[in-house]
Length: 119
Image 1 (tube, rainbow, N blue to C red):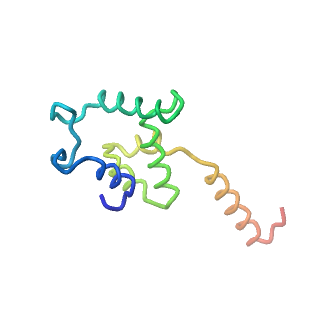
Image 2 (tube, one colour):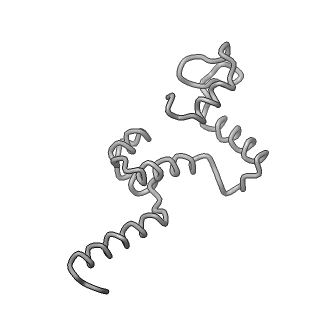
Image 3 (cartoon, helix red, strand yellow):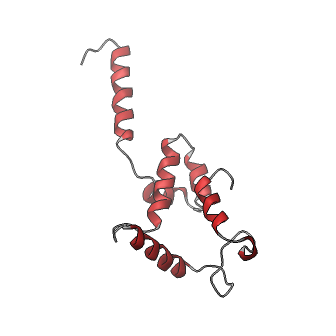
């Protein structure tokens, strides 16, 4: 997708002669397996100094959370993540950030002020 600049940058790093369809392949021309990706991610993460507890799925969680904070509908987030059950997205991928309680607090305060409550 052209709207993801970092993806476009990574794609551009792969020579056009080594691109085959909409997926990446390993050195044997097979679609990249989950395990291959995990190992590749860990090698890159180690080289970049990313702590061991941080793993590649955090990017999916962060993306889902960022989308929710941007106002994207939960159904759209679930479909984008290819979750068959929207509850998977809600329970395991949307991580409340500090902005969530701040928004709630601001809205509660605004509601009280609209009613004339000075608390």
